[in-house]
Length: 491
Ligand code: ADP
Image 1 (cartoon, rainbow, N blue to C red):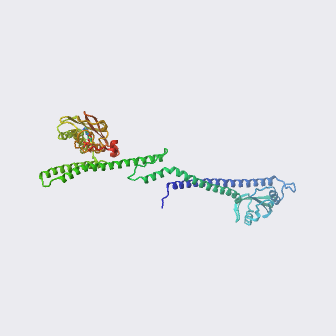
Image 2: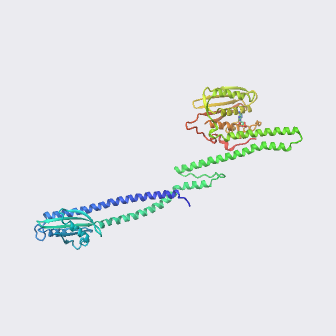
Image 3: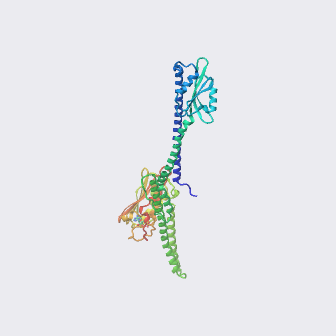
């Protein structure tokens, strides 16, 4: 079964909110209108009571032209003079019994509701005017009962009542219409919302479809970026991620390719020599054995270097400790001297300790020194040096060798890159500088070269202190030269 989509969830949430809003608005308006109706009913009832009191105190009996002499005539006159509104009815009591009914034109016949009449009779005894509600089987009333007394014995009651249910029914009608309109509005909001949500979420759908299309073999698809909002940011981030993945796959494939080529040469040499070797000729056997061992040690060095590079992005690739860089410079110089007879000198010695992995730094430094030896003449000068600034340290190797052509400078730190195709092969595997760059990157730094063809080169490794956030390192990929993905091989 398909999981609910974001689109339907967004829409459902939106509809729920809208429905909730409409309900709150409707209920509030209904409550307000209802209390307005009640207030209007009470106002009208109070006015009727007041005019009855006026009539009782200063009115004249229309039959005699004199003040009222009986309660019955007073109640009768009041009923005749009052013009009730459509849901209003009246009834008059004299001496405790129903005596007068409202004129026939009045629609609400109170006398027909026995329960109400019964209830009114029980109120006769009380002497002051009442404003009350009463619910009978048929409807709900709001009424005013005004007892009148004329002379010592003449008592009567004028009752005027509203059919509250009927008054509220008109209001209910209005709100039924409101409910219908609200439902229609919700349906419309749902339709438009569905379309809009689909439109807004289209980039996410495209993202999903593209992600489904992307496989290891085809990482070339990108999602077109539209607009400038958070979704387009997400699209851009996604595209960047695919870009990085693609680059990483390409460089992985390139690496396998290169490793294959690199191993094929020594294997071909060993295989070729073994094939033509004369087993019965001890001299040939010894010579072939020498060649095979030589090639095997070449392969094992290659494998060692590759292992070093493969572990370079692991967190435990370097273990930093405070090291006296001056002493380390001397140690490296001592070791380098054994490489070849050169005029070995120290350019500068840092006098401060710096946090670094002395074994890895020695490895990188000696790699640079052995390169300097490889690409310089006997007796030429090779200098090593170190310097510490506040947050970084530099170590370098300077030689007066053959130098590097400007177009090679940017790519020699790549794997299996050998520059200077015109110069004789000096047995390098093109991994030395890649390892130096990896060691530099593992120290949050970088490796650079300055060189003049024919005049010499200076290779500098810059090391930086660990940033406070536990020393998160840049991935090795990012520290390599741009050309890394398009390595050229010089065999
Ligand atoms: P290799 O094993 O071929 O020396 P490296 O990665 O150490 O591989 O060096 C890559 C290339 O950089 C070399 O092939 C060489 O052309 C160039 N290079 C490195 N160091 C020097 C140097 N000191 N002087 C001149 N060229 C150098």
